[in-house]
Image (cartoon, rainbow, N blue to C red; front, side, top):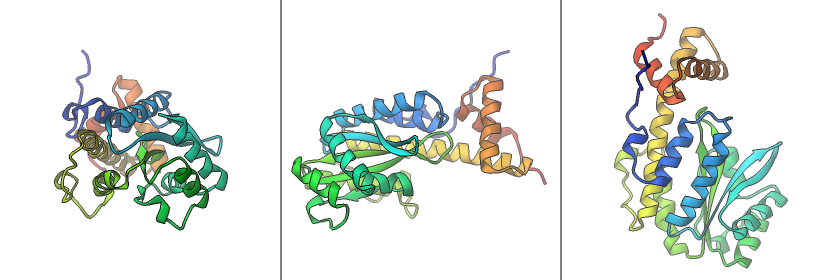
Length: 249
């Protein structure tokens, strides 16, 4: 008999739009899966196409121990990324390291990241936002970098994304007013639902760690094996674990 699917609240079935779908898919995908890079490329292109305040987008990952732009919507975004890699400092690198959004609402006014500031201003960019993205393991795998010409247009985008990552606020009832840009709202919706997926997977890992007396890394491997053995996706295996396994007493 076929194994029925298990879909948690916050799964892809509750999101609307291709960008939100891609963000949720990334959260459900094992971090080392080959699909991860394909999803990151899709997220970059959709963000550039749909999120009006962002003129250009790129994604930074660590490859062979070095920061690398694995997807971009324009050579302009790549040039700003490369300036940060050359200096070994910049908002995209800080986001990748810390796993939190780094916003630069006025690039001309920032006193940090000289190479980033010079490259961005020379290319006519005035504001930026780097957003950490995570996959199935629940840790940051990439930084989504958004670069814009208009600081006033970027300000609502920065505020909305900052709300998602602020643990002191309730994601479903963010206090910031919605943006007038549908693309911004779809990006925010996808990030919120990705966090919901992450919560289900992390809960399952916690159960496995308690039952098996395992580390987080070992629990993640166990969950991946369970998913492969049952023909379930990672999120389906995590939901099953959360519903049917209880911590040992």
